[in-house]
Length: 165
Ligand SMILES: *[C@@H]1O[C@H](CO)[C@@H](O)[C@H](O)[C@H]1NC(C)=O
Image (cartoon, rainbow, N blue to C red; front, side):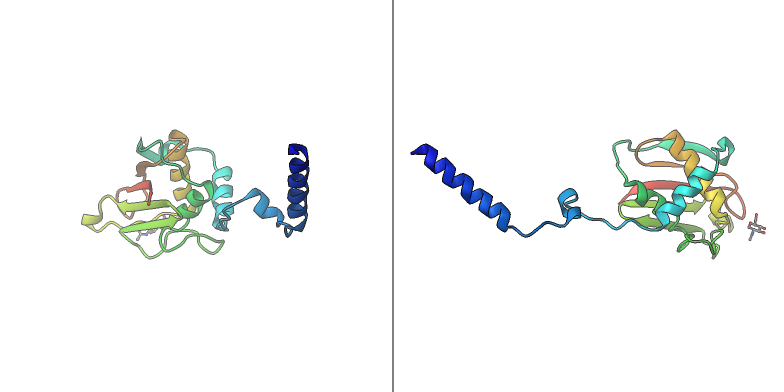
């Protein structure tokens, strides 16, 4: 009798499996789908182009090493500063802000001209900024960090931080 029950159960399960609508291939592997920001690729290629310049930054501090950023959020957030410096037409931070922030997902970069009280504003090229982020990330392989991006303002330097929101 238990044998028959088992057989019936197997048959029922097999029928159910056959009757189930086919699952799209992506749902089979990813329960949660997240759109990758296109600027991820630009940030990635900027990082790969440049060797690390130790003089680009100073006072780098690794903050919470347990914070996890999605890699594409980190790159996209770095290019979301100054409204946006993503894309081939943007070569530098425009608009002379004294402070700015760039966010993607949970990753947020905040920047401020250290001498903003004396009228300093952020004035940095995309390449120089990418160099500051790369140097800080090189020193802090995991988690949030802060540092100073040397000469990134109309006078003095720029303090920057990658944090989580
Ligand atoms: C910003 O930097 C560029 C390039 O270094 C420089 O030519 C320009 O004069 C600077 N702008 C200001 C307002 O300091």
